Amino acid sequence: MDKKELSIVYLGTPDFAVEALDRLVKGGYQVVAVVTTPDKPVGRHQNHLRPSPVKEYALKNGLPLMQPVSLKDEDFLESLRALKADLQIVVAFRMLPEVVWAMPKYGTFNLHASLLPQYRGAAPINWSIINGETQTGITTFFLDKNMDTGEIIDQVTVNIAEEDDFGMLHDRLMTLGGDLVVKTVDRIIDGSIKSQPQLVTEPAALKPAPKIFRETCRIDWKRGLMHVYNLVRGLSPVPAAWTTMQTSTGEETVKIYKTKREEALHNLPIGQVVTDGRSFLKVALDGGYLHLLDLQLAGKKRMLVEDFLRGYKCPETMKMV
View 1 (spheres, rainbow, N blue to C red):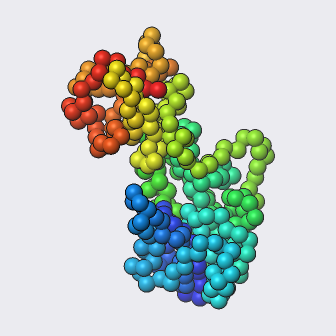
View 2: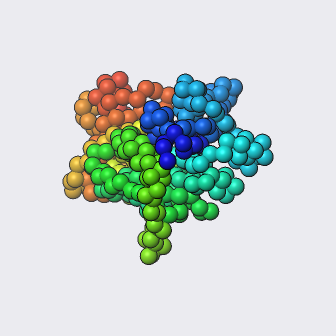
View 3: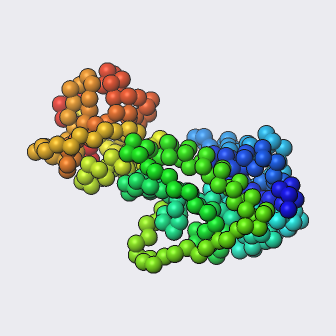
């Protein structure tokens, strides 16, 4: 079968999903429709609508587009059936009902940013860094009735460097994901697919990757130096780890984007801020100090610590809680 004979419906929403779609379009594969989420209300009064990156790409490249509110809506399902697509590809989209994923002749496969079965869920990249992993990867697998449990088609392992943050790892996995999606489609075309069930010998050992909420991002300084260092990396640049800074003049919310570890013995209270008022700002934790290198006060611009200290008069006492 030629690649132009295989009709594909592509389902995705964020930037992460654009790379693989672009690879398919530029590679001459037959993408007959793109499915993405409805435009998102934004702004103080929620009166502006923001299209998803996948929608923007589809419109720019003249691809037929669908934006169902419900994936079980009969009009949407009728339109999807009418396409008679041979294959569906899902990248960073919501969970599909069986009536959708079981529709195509060759099924529906998903690109997931972890080495399944580990880190099933909505935020695998974030959690792999937060948990201090040194390796992760990408997986293509066929969808089934449960979330991220279907048979694995292919995987690529990726090392996580200690200085990697979410943004860095996201971009590397996005690029590799485009390669893997095309490779998986080619294997479907040439009939060489041999998917394998996910092996879960000890379910209790599985590490989940649930959705990130605001409270997930709050720093617990009692958790120790390495935990906080990894939490900041795993949430930078978005949605960003945050904390409350207590001073002699009040409280302020601070987002932290980049840090440096200093292992040391000290007798300071956990959360105590140490600074020379000019070049460094560090927080005492169990195991040493965490230097804050890139931060943002609520209502202010994000800035490097030197710029922050240049414009901020440090109170006598400062503590992160």
